[in-house]
Image: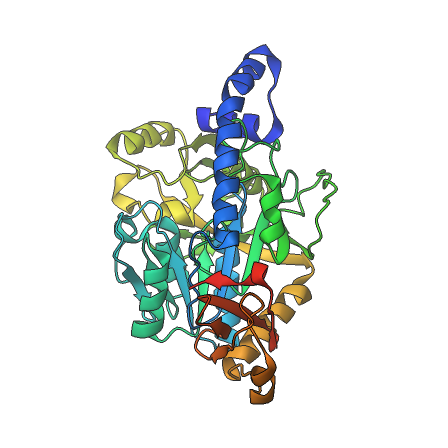
Length: 416
């Protein structure tokens, strides 16, 4: 197992042996400090000490509490497909991890396939643009600006915030939390002693929880003490593989041949296990760090392993950074899709509410608006149609409207 794999096992399952327990105790004070910082940051946004921006179209956020490996990209892809099937013009807003670093937003896809390569877009945004060429994909460190670009320049009706659970600056209409069904909160500690970006209490911000890989045989799902709707999904590899050069073929054409599997993703062991479940014989497996760029030395190492094998196989995310000429054996990419096991109707119902809001702009009756007052100053308020909020100009507070009902609670208001 690679160093990355050993750390993931340590952070997810907990320490084993005296050496790992010593490491855990050394890292624990750093985790306590980091946990305190994330709690204070969340409190600052909740209390209005840091401003929250609401854009004029609905925002659906997909994210997790762990450092990766829960299947955000397949879930975002499913949401894109759902929006397309329901005649909604959706845009993915991503930080573009692994691509260029710039505050200026960059359009990766404007409805006609990728416009830039993965080195600029980042792995996941480029992959989404290739799999969903009719979609809009915009990346940028400032996701508020990226969202505005998607709306103003590309006419997006709904924004899908990829890996957005910790991006508290942008208000969202549906907050989806993903977690691995086997160990949804790792060993329970935040980084670096654990695998959490935030403490478990942050799950309370979610509108629903999607447990991924809930179909893995032999897994015992932990008891979750969360007041959230729970949806269960599985991840299935495609039954077809696509070479870096050429046309696709059925995966069973690779059975009985010696393969070398490699990837640079958050949970490589899960990928290798799924390949074996398809009946593939893997002579070697190589786990690179997440978002690996495959410099010449990595390709040379793979080619040495490939000399005794018949083919290479990797993920779609990794394949976008490779060329057929760089490897000594044919290299195939295989896709990953999300499959709903339980609760799909819960998610679709919430999405349908958003769809109807887009088709029928929200309004607050004038007679109701006349009797509403700001709970803080008792003054008059107005309705902001663009953002679907009740505004108190005196207090500079914006109160949300949910299901056409004004929520006139100070704790729910944001500072403007």
